[in-house]
Image (tube, rainbow, N blue to C red; front, side, top):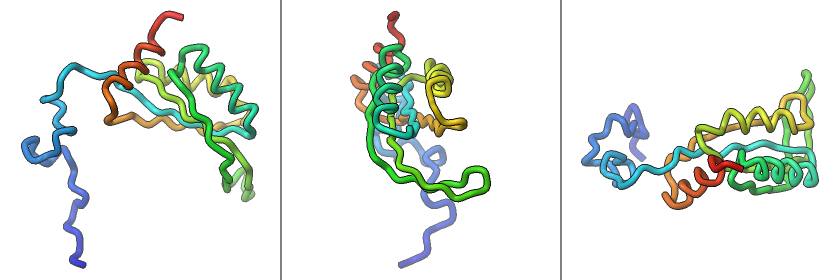
Length: 140
């Protein structure tokens, strides 16, 4: 196999729009879609994950939540290698609500330093992304 060229994979910003796949040509798209994020956190058990997810959706900080688990985590805490069984909670929200969602997770979370990771959703079904925006930005 030939070596990959320097800068591989190509930076989309450097590729002319006419040679990029259509989904990356934002200037040629139809109506604007909501800028959404997926926020994840891990929790120590299913009951806590259910409780936190329900509260965040009830408070309209997240449009929805999916709970996955158990997952098995290995990490360093206070200088020691630890292992734990945890539950993932994936939440969908908008750019306008992501900071408030993160703060509320900290308030509800039993861990001293909870995992809270927010990733911008770069592409998705426009109807779904707009639904997320309608849910979390509607008055409750």
